[in-house]
Image 1: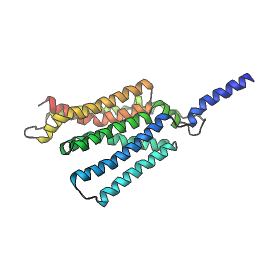
Image 2 (image 1 turned 90 degrees about the vertical axis):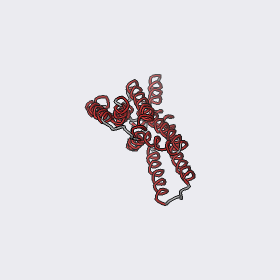
Image 3 (image 1 turned 45 degrees about the vertical axis):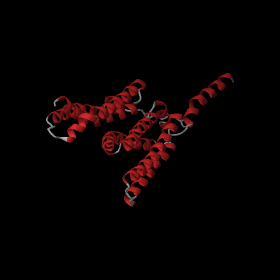
Length: 247
């Protein structure tokens, strides 16, 4: 009788957390909502500053973006792992492009660029909370209380991805092109020298931190996110370094 009670308690303690959405997933969904609201605020603020009329095309694109990401957020709430991967791809692409957007917006209007910087931080928070170990465990259970027996094959583990070494030729190419850039009277070169170290330096620090956290917690998803990000920014970072150190 005592053994049966012990087994029952053990099973309950192991399965209960898997039937309830982790708080970190809830936080990630909350910040996705905050991001969508910020997109609306940014759209309205831009129209007010520029005194531009609200066009059907731009409004339709905004509504589509909100509904599109909102759909994935709803599916994440339903425990759909493919929706989480879709958000990963969308947000990583957005994180990589935002530094350039922030730079352009700062030259145009600092307030809008500040809002974009906040969005960058929000997206990073979403990925950190969505791809932590606790969230991964919850997503990897297709049914409450039933563990998934599918393990990641060693050949495709994020820590053993051969494609990541493409970062070396990309860095060499970027640095060489940056060194050969004609900076005489080049406004673009001046912008890179002034803002490049801050934008790409911040991106490098954030992605490197995510990689270290992923390696420490043995979180393959977080490792994969950070490696993809580092690969994507490797060329602009090395290009910026070439422009700065060679001129």
